[in-house]
Image (cartoon, rainbow, N blue to C red):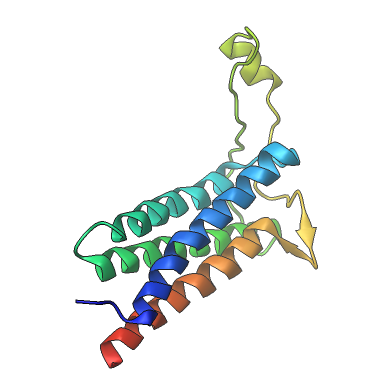
Length: 159
């Protein structure tokens, strides 16, 4: 059985979008020093799951189900991004803890790594474009992408 073009497009989108969003997150972290806060990490985990489901969809027999799970992962990350953006814009209170990445380097002890790591607040946007933070962009791209994937999968049922 051959897949309709809409399913193939949904599959490619389900693979490309979380990969691109994760790449952007890691480039901003390691290339520009924008270290993630706790809620930033929360947004990454559903992208990892979406990426895994989308990759499996190329191998497994239940392709559409795996693509739908990938879309669900995108929507989950988008929902977390919405919450995080609201915290950054002061619309509601977020988590009270802060996060830092502490990986020992060059013979440094774990304690030194923790003490020297940057403290990252969840309620401050470290970067914006047109007033939209990275969490806000994640909300937009993940939500629109997830909904687009579901719409493409629904086209398959309508055909």
